[in-house]
Length: 218
Image (cartoon, rainbow, N blue to C red):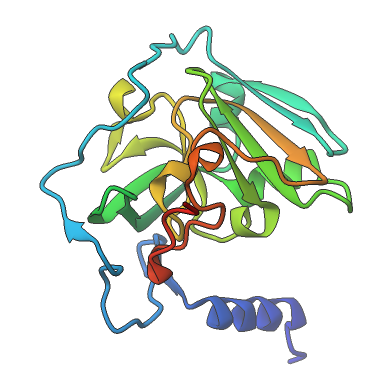
C-alpha cells in the first residue's frame, strides 16, 4: 500500500506542535513544561470578569463579523453564516496578565485557521488586527493566529458565551496573555504591517508570552 504522504506530513506537523488529539476529538495542548502554571500566575476561583467598563449586548439577529484587509475574499458573517462554518471543540488554559489563570476551559466555535481558508490572505499579509463592539482593539502576528488552539469561541464549558465574558463571540488565543483575545469581536483585519492595539499602546507587551513573564514594555 503506498504511503499517504499528506497524512504523514500532517502527523509530523502535529508532533512538532505537540498536538494532543484524544478519542473524543478535542484538541489539548500537551507540550511538556516544568510547570503548567506560567511564572507569576496563580489559579483563580471561577472566571473573573475584566473589561473596559462596557459590556455590549448584541442580539444574534443583529450581530455581524466583518473580515477585511489584505485578503482575497473579504466577507461579512452573520450568526447563521458563522454556524455554517466547521465547528470544533478545543480545551485550553487561560492566562490573564493580571496574574490569574484557569485550566481546562472547553471552547466551541470556529478555528481561526478555518476562517483563513475561507478568506485567503494574500502573500503579503503578516499581521491581524481585531476590533470589538466596545471599540477595544488588539493585534497579533498571523503566524500566532494559525496555531491549532486559536478559536473564535461562542461557548465556554458547554454553555453559550455570556455577555460579560465576550459573548456572543470572542477570540481565544491560549499561548498568549488573554488581553490578546478580543471579546465581542466585530472586525478581523488582515494587514501587511503591525498596528498596536488598545493595551499595546498603553505599555503592554506586543508579544505577550506568559512563559517568559512578558507582560509590559514599560
